Image (cartoon, rainbow, N blue to C red; front, side, top):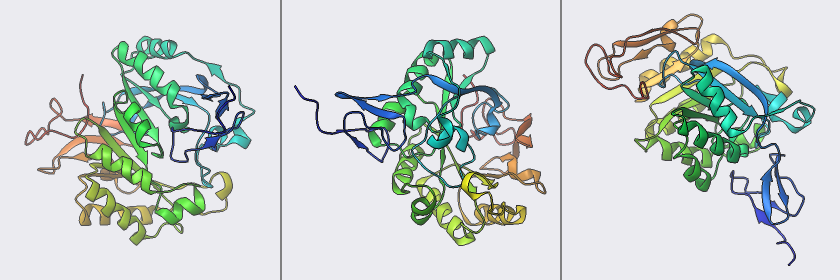
Length: 327
């Protein structure tokens, strides 16, 4: 029997319809006969140990070291990509890789005593079959998992991932015009996935937006803030753009622009935990109780300085903190 003329990949919202031998937009999903395969399954371009705060995840095991796992590939073509050497096809093809089986990744986790494996640096959505196989192996040895992602995955993919991924950090980059002009994607599927995870009490979700002054306006960021507030997002990180990839001539984000956004968001929305890296304001990285305002977690330059939580609750009023802090 002849193979089907087209098969659709359901990993991400590009939903590439592939003929035999054809690659998807990501460059690593390829059709062979009547199936679609991940071409670089298990082939790592990076295996590293990071502070969990650098993911960033501020509400999961503060101060922990996490095992960071990365294959190459991405379903976006962001002109400003900060990890373009492992995400963009014209740059990653020459990279040397090392195959790490899911069980071996789980052994690396337990041997190092790390509580969490983070799938990160590139876009795990496009190699989610490996990520999920590894997550099963990690769950079997008592570990936790985190996915650092652009969030452009399908509802079917989220159904597969949700039972096996303990924490998500989704990158909300901008509005629809921003995605169309600078990323090669669309914002609504990302907002849909944010709404789904924010509304699920069993999910840990943190959202990140890299602010690009000149491409983002204050009012535009405040519109995103309203969407996240309405969705019930509890944690939002603001980071500053640094020139990279095809936008090396674009000016970096000024600290005062990021500071002003932080101040507006915390004053004008109900998002309880907003963070921004500020050279002038260390408090922008601290975690305060959403009920009484007391200091619960103190950080300095993305590193834990002091964790004052008592079994995941505020030391002053006993209110439970959003997140995963034990177990």
